[in-house]
Length: 614
Image 1 (cartoon, rainbow, N blue to C red):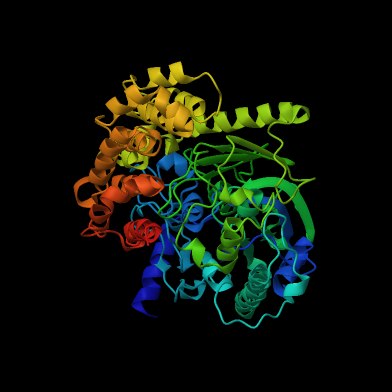
Image 2: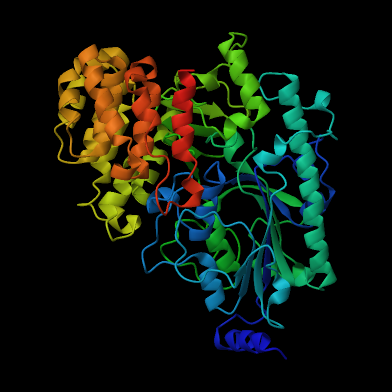
């Protein structure tokens, strides 16, 4: 017997694995919605996952919580909504309070062998050893004999980057693909959608190989299996957006007869459920299946196992910064309707994200819009947003008919609007702070700790101003003006943003407080005021604002997050940024010791500004 096996046996014997504990296997894929045969998609070709669904149960209403990988996976690993831990941006790096762990650590403490093969991409620092092994070689076969395992196999063949990879000989016929109502019907779009389905078929075969390994090891009836995708379709207006198309994922759950006592109350082999489940529910569910009571700080609800909770009435989603572009969206849905609250309605949906624009669908869609060859709803993606959106998923699955202004749907709107607000308050949503302020206010504490302190983070007062400033309502200038005098910098930030959102009229009416805000102690306030005056102020105001923004765009002086925010503002100044172009192009684009996941953001922003003047 090897030394390693002896050590694993000792660990297993000294921890408290429940008697007859189930093994748990997760098979995950990337960037795909429920486009599987078992979900009724006749265009799909997914025999292995269809077979798993025939033995298990499919979830019709599973949500990823975030429409992009890093914050979605951060939700899963922490059992918490990333806006409550300051980890909502794509990508970022914050930390949990010392008392909190990532959920595989609780499994390992109970005697489980935990392996991850192999993607992590968390926006939270790992609080100690999370996995027994996390690598392309990680496998349940490395555990000690008889030791229960929790193993994750991540399949990447469906990723956005693979959908657009050329050359590619399509297997699924592009002429037969269904083009959603928001996409233009072009050969490029059809090719991307057909290739997307081709990649799902490849992924299905890989999932089949993993399941075959389980059978080869004689573990099929000892193992609970989840299959899920990390967020919706990897095409524009799905990936990165909090529509149902960006958050809706497949979820298949197989629980063998041996563990029927752990099945959800609505479980039926080969059946389906409309129960609302989200990624925030995954961690408590796995612990519940393993016989471990989920810790109190988890914000989700177990949907199976010994600690199954009642079904919840709503699912919640969020959007923060997407790579180099800032945005803030909060979303809630029930069984039928989805409500979206846009907190940066002055930004178009399709802001230029360099990585997204590599996709042929994005490029042709943008070109056709600029050429004036599109009509609604295909134009909406390239235009600014309303403050609120409401869609009937039963009648309008492509989410193109905004019912927020419909008198017949007023009660639904108000109910979901209230649910969104109550959720943000309950998790003490840190998204109402500018990104750099999350770090500066936290100091040596974890952002979650700072956010829980009403003195450090008066979330309701800040959110009140954010809701007002972004409401698009008339007659709010006096309230915005009062916001510039608030003692909390985040309130002042939203007041300045409110002036910017109101365009030329709003900026000119609030020019006095905006000028004073150019000297505010908080960088985010200076940036919001600088963009407002730079875009809509007088020539003299624009000149001063430009100088402020260029100075703040120096990452060596002000850090990555302030610099990114300032460069975003400079990009939106268009021709008014021209006098500072040489200074902008000379700005630092790399910081010593910068996390390599972030290294492309500053160069992308500066390259975009350069391209606008070529």
